[in-house]
Length: 384
Ligand SMILES: Nc1nc2c(ncn2[C@@H]2O[C@H](COP(=O)(O)OP(=O)(O)O)[C@@H](O)[C@H]2O)c(=O)[nH]1
Ligand SMILES: [Mg+2]
Image (cartoon, rainbow, N blue to C red; front, side, top):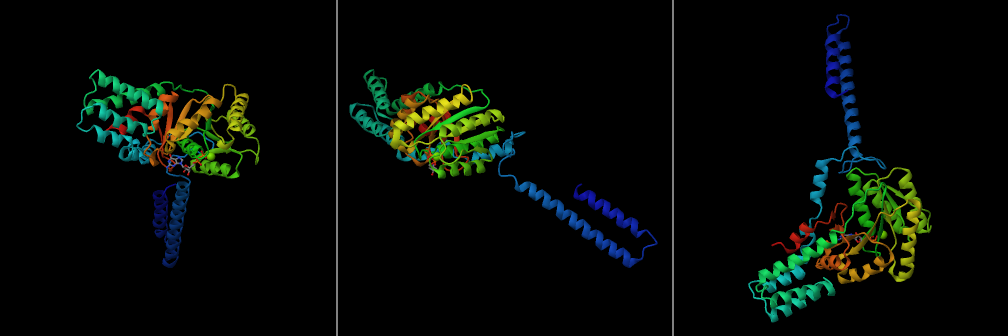
């Protein structure tokens, strides 16, 4: 019953009783005051109930914990996406302090000759693109110069953009869509790269799109790591499966995978530890987790995402090798692009690893994660 209906009933009651000759004025006044008090109380109760309903909602359209959302709210989603950092914002430092600004400074209005090529060489080798990729790019420049194709700065710039795009496209084209339900994603990477944060951001993103999400707390070595994942689960409004303290990570994630399958989850994001100081153990442990998840749910994990910290520059590429040796990495998440001038590392990563970048972290807020988009990225990097 809404306020207007209540008001109408009460007004009718006052009119009706005021026509009743049996009631004297003092009684009528008392009744009127009583009715007014009643209306006020009813209105207050309705407002309170509405407020309480509203309080349960965060900025997001909220499917209840562990449930699928009926309809993702497009308007809310748009606002959310717009408040996330764009690639342009995320690449600001790379463009202003990184190799892009140094290259564009070199090329402006100049002809390419041996001397300029040398300067380009210096910039590229220090650009965190990675040695192999840099050599490839330089060879192309030398060939172009010899063939007299890359004569002026604009052409060299176009060449760099074209080559970078081709490297990204080649890596992205290896991406395969996973249709399994539940989709089990194992997230690996060195400690501190941003695994747990990215899982939290992705959980929120998937829940917003209407998926039923479970997090698996596979970093059982530190209680703080489990607490951190739990805090993200709360923030994202999704469920978490934790084992007992110091329980074997593989057995926790086995149980989490079983739960995801038995209870109709759409996606399980499995957090893992990444202690580098014991890299042989790490490799063994990741292999075991991978195997054991597959015993819980055949063909799982469907994805293994390696989280790389862009601020590490070329070292991120070195670190990645440990993980590529351990498990079949199907995608990359590149974090902290906002905090670095080393955005060029994306080109090296794609060229050397040929693994698609699935998401890019561009800040610490829950919405600061974006699916990787080659064209948008190239535009943000090379665009004027
Ligand atoms: N600026 C920025 N910081 C990030 C990003 N992703 C993660 N971080 C920060 O990196 C630190 C380590 O993240 P965490 O998720 O704990 O790493 P983990 O050890 O791999 O799980 C935290 O302080 C995060 O806030 C990002 O995209 N941008
Ligand atoms: Mg962590």
